[in-house]
Image 1: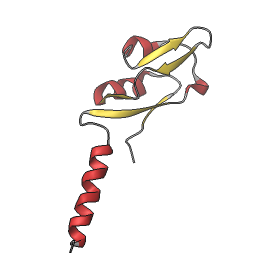
Image 2: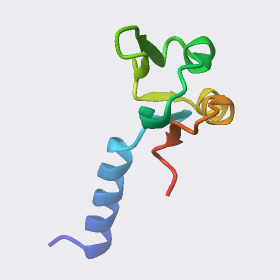
Image 3: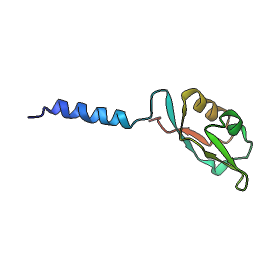
Length: 87
């Protein structure tokens, strides 16, 4: 017979396995208000790419090291970047 506490622990472990890897944060991009400054692509070219035809950024990766995401959020003049892991 399975103990309720064991079931809860199992669910917690499963959720932890699905979470963003340690040291990385989920990046959310809302380019609707983007001014096209390009700061994001200079700060994090491995995280953010640029579509010339659209003149908008896109995510190359949906995760970034915590410090990189903090810089993206701080330096984007239009606030296009958010921490997807923040609750």
